[in-house]
Figure 1 (cartoon, rainbow over the protein chains, first blue to last red):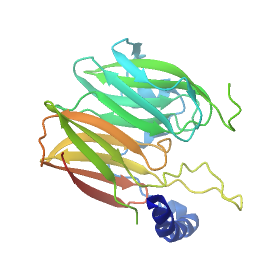
Figure 2: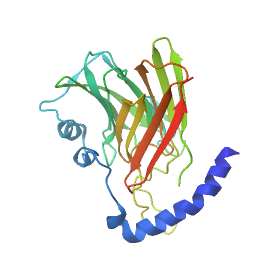
Figure 3: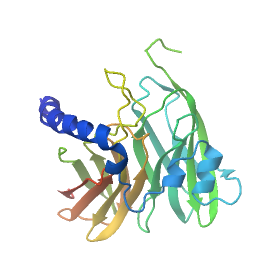
Figure 4: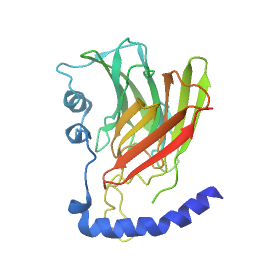
Amino acid sequence: MERREFLTSSSGATALALAAASGLAPAYAQNAPGWNKVAFDSKSFAEAAKALGATSAPVESKELILQAPEIAENGSVVRVGAQSSLANTTQIAFVVEKNPSALAALFDIPAGTDANVSTNIKMGQSSNVYALAKVGDKYFYAVKEVKVTLGGCGG
Amino acid sequence: MSDPMRIRAQVQGDKTTVRVLVSHEMESGQRKDAAGKTVPAWFIQTINATWNGKTVMSAQWGTAVSKNPFVQFSFKGGKAGDKLVVSWVDNHGDKRSDEAVIA
């Protein structure tokens, strides 16, 4: 019921926004302050790590746990989570290697906040998914292969 | 312009766990509409949460975050009745802020 209301109430606004955006796309697009455009333009894990400040290749760590499904039925909504038990973790990023935009999300971990975040991401195809953690000035990662079933044929 | 965020914040011991469901199209800029035209990217770029004025969550999102994004995080502190504010800014310069009470 709520979803129907949401769809009917937002369809007008969305149509307007799309109409305005399609005609004025360059002028209308306005990056939010503090948004790291270079990092979000990266096309690979290595590029994303570098754009986020890594000066050498990140090291794999068992203290960084990446939760992601083995098989994602729906590539539009893949729940991923990362938990770091490395002290002084200040950032956690999720990178989907084969996505057109490899860096999906970047979380700052302020003092007092757990280095444990979850979110839903889109995956264009089966790919390695990385969690990248910034610990002090070092970078660590965990990786998992996530298979994406498009069209529901399984396997 | 968008529906309110659904924010659930619960105290568990000395921590507060927060789950947020944001209402936003999160267009990646890859999709084509029925007419074959590419739908321009429209997505939340920055989002943060504050508790008693302190930032407890801060993130930058790209086009790969799902439509109607979900985020879960937890922080030390918080007690029932405290206020939590979640705010976001998207790539159109639109913003939204919603408040919730910690349970």
